Image (cartoon, rainbow, N blue to C red; front, side, top):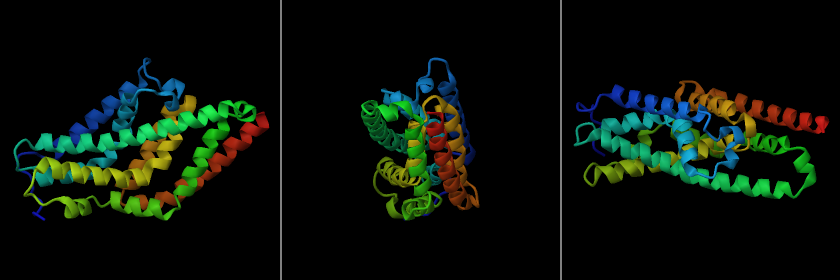
Length: 245
């Protein structure tokens, strides 16, 4: 693999600032009155809405990967465009995953609509999603994918040669990194899909959690406490719904 270049043509801070600004704009768009979050993410029929959510929630935690791409392509022509290829590929993978999650949520809602008991206890579905996410926090798949997400350089070692099309290799690195990110975070994202009227606050909280797990030096130590918190929250939510019913 070609050695990582310091990238004289593209300062590292440029990538960081662009990502943070774009993510901030995405968050602002999610808070606008015309947004769909008030009806719950599961009702979003347009994948554009999901893509905006991905940019807001998942692009900042991808900064280590994007800054690594900056180092790889910094001395090539149009380096910011090449980093942009990586960012678009990353968001694109998550958008496809979003289509699957949204279809699954719609199917579950359709089935739940045929069951009177679930109709009387809608919080049970959110509690089930939290339960699944809580259990997943303790799984070997979560552990392996989080390890990969925290070490983006391994993806460059596997896929960067620097002799073929840099755009193709950049997209390949971003796609494989995105898949590890999906394996790490998909269960938590599933909670957002079922969060109904609380979708936006839940999104903010989960975005902080996912970023902390992947970016903080001791982020791995948060995995189990988050898992226990999700399990406790699921039990409390379901119990509260049943008692209220």
